[in-house]
Image: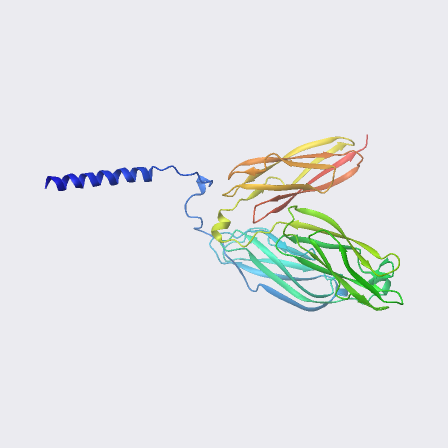
Length: 382
């Protein structure tokens, strides 16, 4: 009997020691704000659209811009806020309800489409970023543009050798770095002999060029397709490149084209839990006025930024629209709840009158990764 009791006591001691080491084991700290611990969603907003797509049908380029409003209702129990609406193309301009939408009330997302120089079918999307639990919502528009009949000189204003070109610069506008994007432009053989395109193309690795009509008969039109693959480009913001093609013409057979684009980071769809744990970039002032300054003066200021999210915020880049403006974040990485500044300086040398410049801030905030700060000044001579 005594042996059984002794064995039981030893077992209990061993179990207690094991539990002590297991429970007392050191854990790595998790970078989460303490005041946000607990259930992530108790009261939440919920967005519901009457429809998520709209077909404009066949429209005429001559009639100019068209628009459509998508109406939504807040089906949740908290105020609904539309943080941002991102369009995939500069031809599509979004507007939306800026003030919080109370539970049971309605708001709108309005999309304006500009059909100028965009003949044929179109399919565009808008990404809606809100404070709801759901993943980012997408809306879609589509249709077909009937182009204006123009004189040859207007349809193909650029002359390069025996070819007339609708464009010498191809703008891809905004490209989300998710997948390749293709654009085409028209060419016209303005000679009395055939012109063929050679397969040799001089272009950077992210650009590829194809000739759907490799042989152009006299007085006939064709097209050139340019595909832009942004996935391996680390740069964000404005970028320009050139490519060259060759024809079998006896002279002026090398044609050079400019390609421009504004690159933005791609964020895959996220669950409500992932969005709740994501970083958030809050810029204290999205505009700053230096007031009146003397020509030649260099003036400086600091813009406060804060990570209001629950994981590390990384400032990818800051870019100014002008060499006269320099922006530099004091810190590139901010912990949850941490604040820092972006140092901004403006050189007024050689400038006069009213000045308005923009600084774009790129970050890993999935809800609002591209934000702008505008600075203004009035420059007085002498």
